[in-house]
Length: 334
Image 1 (cartoon, rainbow, N blue to C red):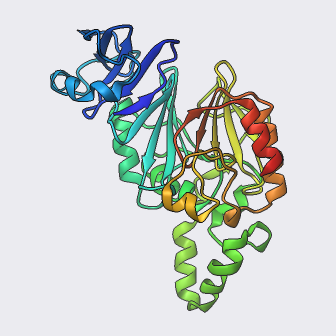
Image 2 (image 1 turned 90 degrees about the vertical axis):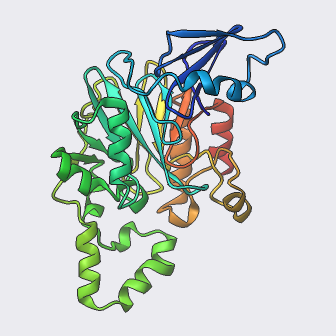
């Protein structure tokens, strides 16, 4: 089971293995789609109603009776456990890969439309399509693809998906030069200088040209509006969060302070060997070895803290609630 945010105080929610959402309300268990309203199962007095993990096995048989897609709520289909997690209203996270370096993309609904935020690595396109079909149906493409930044673990499948869906890809204007897939010294970070560029220089010119062409998404990328509006999501706003890359952005929904923050802030420790090996979950700044400007990145963490986010949805690590003091400490201490 995977935890989800029900949006209601005193209600615990999980996603079960066959995609049904389950809520514990008092001494009842509600089984249904992403906003359950249907079947109720009475719990015994000795059950821990605040821990769905403790009753997982007892619910397994009952949950199997409800097949994904058999019920709809507000036009949203059932979600697939293990691949899609309900983060907040109309916000679904898709975890791609395993371990602390697994990358997240987000399916975000607004009215009758939805958008995809970030696209994972090259080769992740089929997993993203399957996840999107499980939430919004197989025939509804997104209104747009939004990028928090152009790095291969966030923009790798953007070209494939945009060309297939025939939708635009948006990134901050300062990020667009990276869409050509070429090494740009002014955009480089430590990993580029230490490893990537030296290896590319050793390759034959034709091989290097083919690699760059494979990463080129200039045919589908355009700049985000300068006024902060988010294409396809009229209730969201662009928040500049440079540092990890020159044009890194976050996306904010002000009414409930949900922030999709890319790599500006992470919830898994990728800045220490122990953190990476153990998959230690904690608030963390962007990985320093892939960050363009560390001081600017700290300033962006402070700017995000000033928004008082209720939920952070990062590029790596689970989406989670956050205390503002913890974000401010991260900005101060790095």
